[in-house]
Image (cartoon, rainbow, N blue to C red):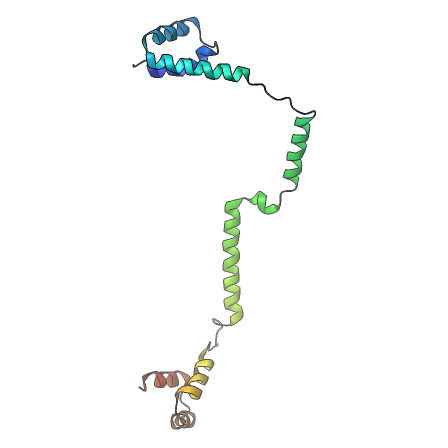
Amino acid sequence: MKNCKKISMLLSASIDGELNSAEETTVKNHLKECGVCSQEYRNFKKLDSLLVKTRVPDQPPFFETRLLNRIREEEASMSILDEIGYLNRKAIAACFSVILLVGGIYLSGIFLPGNRGDLNTVESYLTEKILSEGEKSVIMDKNISENSMVSFAVYRD
């Protein structure tokens, strides 16, 4: 059984007549003693006889020339993204997303110096919806800062 792995590797070469005489003798002697390897050898022989009987279809005229021309045409028509490759496309998409995000933030003015962001909206909401008329008049008369007005509205309850 120790030789079965070695013999199994030589069976196909034996059928194809590729072994030297010493290797061929070793294989034949092993096959006389080992039923498992003998069965594998018979299976290889059956497969070989089927392959020999199989007819390879004839190629149409100029098949190889047309195939090579088609490959060249496909290569020539590849877009730049196809040439860059899948991983590089993902990296480009990620960079583009970051650029769009940064551009959107910049254009919205959120991080511009001196910008109050949405404070005007908060101030309007507080003065129109939350604060009573008396509270509005006190805030307007005393020139209370916008931050203080927001704090007042939050903590007044």
